[in-house]
Length: 247
Length: 384
Image (cartoon, rainbow over all chains, first blue to last red; front, side, top):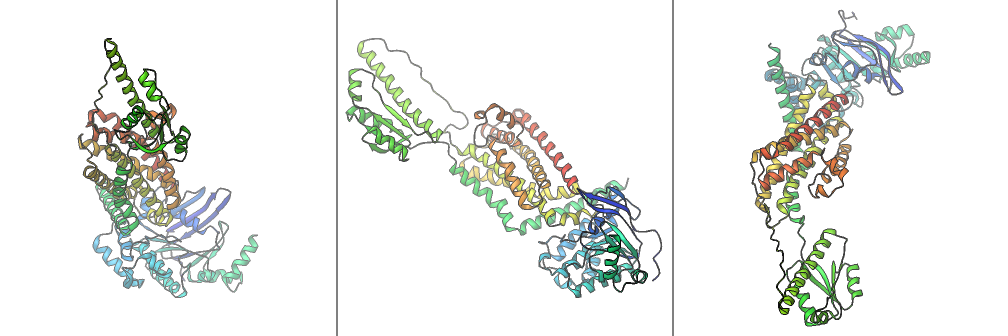
């Protein structure tokens, strides 16, 4: 696959963040270019969520630099947020509002014109096949349906950068495949996508992969290239070998 | 140049979005709706009827050991005005004392043997009164009713004797109190403003605190914070609906108070309006502040009560501040509830206007702004 060119849309350089005595980020760095799907793969506690929150400007850093489209996500937060979509790991929509009410609320917060909102929400509901459930309350959706709604809410304002924190966690295999298909569609529209996942088998679906462990990257590259370089048969094998090397 | 009005329009659209969402969620939650609408009405009615500082029909045990015309007559007249009520008769002082222990009577009046004989002979006659001090208010009323009655009897006797002996009548002082504003000394006009203050404090503070911690607890705050909305717009959008509900509750309590308890509206209502807005600034900010130190709705709820209880106790809503020790009285100077209740009572019951009340309104404003800035500072910090 041809490496997508241009300046990185999302860049982390030497991120350091400590919470009390624990170091969540210990020099993690990565870059995602427009039209690229980057997978941050690693076990729980590797620092994936902290890295994502730092890139989205939700936490301060103790060291290093985060850039979204060349902007500082904290100091230039509002400009960044106009162009960034984030789907947090945990439930983050209003459970007592319906699918449509959630979409409408975020459409208004992003100040979408009425016509644009109608067109985009209809298209997103179709793509996610949530249209028949538009009036269902968010807390009555299945895990997979909820994730698709969260994705739709994060995509309403057509962000140039999309960050997803473990979107396939707790989702059935069919919905998982659907979610990945949707993501590929958006990436081909030129979006830069950063996705974190604890599932090694999902690494192959990314354009590039970073293996996260203890707040830093152990290895990085195109999935097949990584496997070929290490001689491992699967990502799980590769990961275990890398962790052992790192001690 | 074009950025500012555009920014304002954006903020307005976002504000409206949050307000609509908040209203939709509130209306959908039956428990909250009950808390906001039915609870204030219930409290007005219950407090208005139940809290009555007027004490009468105090149960009294009478031990008439003298059994003369005089002792019977005085026992009857002592109990005639309704403050005291004859609950039991005792045949000895010990029995009367036992009735106090068993809570059959709150006071006992004992006429010793020879009471009538002493009176006839012109000697000092004695009456013993035992009072149960468990309820200090009731004890004071009972004791003063007894001493007032026998004081008058003593005076009348002195005059009679002076007249009989042909001496000039001694001059006396007659006190004629005139009670202003609430001549029949009803408790409800005093208590309904208290209900107003309590209801507003409890409802707006706790609902605000819980509404904000719900966003945190449910993870929705994080999702909203990655949209371009300003934290201040989000806050305003969340607070405005509750401010509106607070104002609605004020009208509700005042109407119920006027209708059921004949609450007077003597002062300019504009003063009440301004005071209520300032008080809402205080209660909403307090709710916001509580939400920033709580992680869940439950913590907010508990923290709310932890703060509200002393705030109400030290406000003079139910117990007079002048009765508190000096250092505690000093603490109440920082209590916004105290200033609001003073303004409301002065305005409604005494007809006080802006000229009378502006210092208190100013204090409310200062306290409200201080709370608001502390709360927004913590809120911004806690977003991290």
